[in-house]
Image (cartoon, rainbow, N blue to C red; front, top):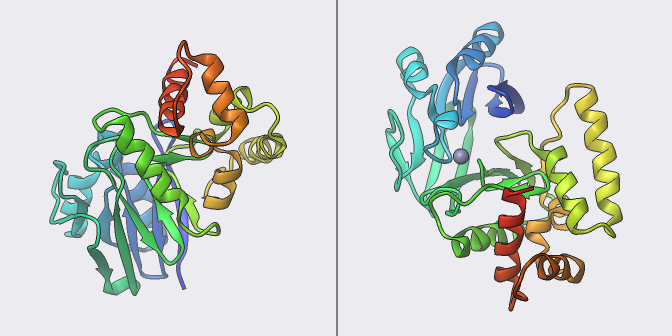
Length: 254
Ligand SMILES: [Zn+2]
């Protein structure tokens, strides 16, 4: 029996820990200290580090953790990941015998050019690509890549649980409500997110189905979102990709 726990790190990162009663794997341990504290207090051995991309707030704890646990480090083959032992790309799998887990790898470039996601039994660990009600900034990849990656994730089954690497949901909902004021699901989601945050609980995991109902970056083809993007831009978008590009730039300045 596995459990998944959120270990808060820095200001708004989550290190996701997948564990049984003996072993644990950590997704994107940007800081070793909070994870070490958790592993030690729970008596767990770290058997794998799973990195989604190379940013320091995701890989910063790698070397210290590897030193202590001699664990393999998985990450995107196209990026430099400190201590990486197993470079991965789409189609490959990660086998974690101690945890009895096999994870699939998806390529989702855009936020960084080699960004990957891990999919395990209806659970998606998507780093900084898809956020609760938002998406990552496009730093290294192209807008086309980011849009295609988000469409790929939105095609996963609706009940797929989405484990994002940052707690950005509430701020993202504020932007989403600006873009799509007529979407009643957003009002409900905002109330739920505020109640969770008030109790110091993560707003995650989300689900693909909830993101498709509320996340403007997955809804560029919905008429209210498309028209909102059109109004925000000097030139009318010709397709969903162009509407996505307008929304992404709008959010950067929001
Ligand atoms: Zn990042």
